[in-house]
Each structure stands twice: as structure tokens, then as C-alpha cells.
Amino acid sequence: MRKVIYVSEAVKGFPVDLAGEQVKIPNNTKKFLNGKLADLCRIYYKGIPLDELFNLLRGSYIEPIQEDGDIWSGFLTGAEGRTTFELAMLDNNSGEYKPVKDCVLSLSWYKMPSGKFEIVAYLS
Image 1 (cartoon, rainbow, N blue to C red):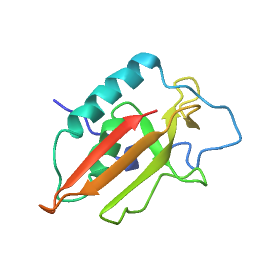
Image 2 (image 1 turned 30 degrees about the vertical axis):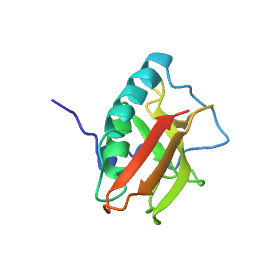
Image 3 (image 1 turned 120 degrees about the horizontal axis):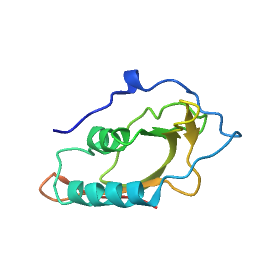
Image 4 (image 1 turned 135 degrees about the vertical axis):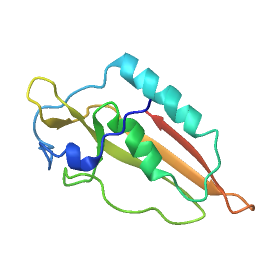
């Protein structure tokens, strides 16, 4: 059964101190998440599936953040585009979220003639 962690459950430490200590996503976690992201990219969507992408990350206590260190909030528009999301990860020692070093969520999308979206998403 898939566990979904909602933002309301994971707000301690926000906004993240961007100038403070950074954490690194463990290689095995990054590999696991990239495999799951690849699975999501095999499906076509009626819209850009941000909820699915973000909930997958939240299952590993990773949260997309804005430039000010707060939880990412917004929407994406256009028939095609690309963006990256800065990330924060729960630090087990402090129990707070800290910015992730050397890794972002990369997302690109394209609206096909059928009206459905094709996406490519990965942790770089």
C-alpha cells in the first residue's frame, strides 16, 4: 500500500534556512525515486501531474521548495515547458527540513495533439 504524506503533516522547519546546513539525498533513495518517477513518465495525463510527483517525493520526506525556502506553491502553464524545483529533505538528527545539496527535481512537459500531457521527470 502506498503511503502519502500530506504537506500539513510535514511543515516543521519551513521556511527552510537556505543559508544553513545542507543535506544530500542518499544514492539508494535517489535511485529508487528516479525509478518511480520513470514509471510516472510512462503515463499520459490530462494535466501536469504535480500532485503525483510531489506525493512521490513526500513518501521519502522530500519536499519541493520555493526560492524563499517555503513549501512550493503554484501552477505550471503552457503546451510545453520545463522547470526545476529546489528540494528540502527531513534531517533525522534535527527533525527539521534542510535544503538538498546538488540535486533538483527536473520536469518537462508537452501537450500532445490528443490534449494529453507527456512528462519527463527525474532527480538530477
